[in-house]
Image 1 (cartoon, one colour):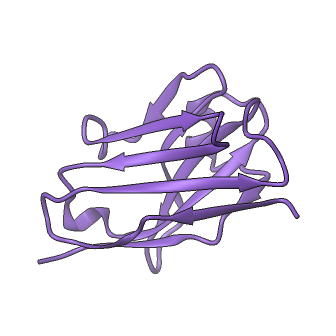
Image 2: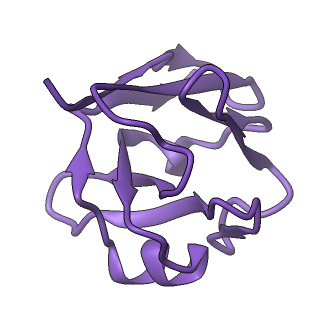
Length: 125
């Protein structure tokens, strides 16, 4: 079965940190562009950060310098390190795997062949 499974979400206070994981099973992430997307009620899903197979990355302006996307091909997993979290970072975070697209294209166009089920991140005091 081909699937992506996210984990690591939760409730955190403003200024805190979380690390999200996106683990693939049934297929390899090696040659794919992987992305993290966020969705809040009433809004469209938006790209947060994406990473190409080359390692090139894209970050949305709102998260640049606070979030870091890392891929571990050996573990077939992609991580999103989130620091200095703000209430506006709250949402359901989805990971997705696309073909060999540019990282920016994947994030901006919300591309994805496979999607995870999402993990909730809540930033609140």
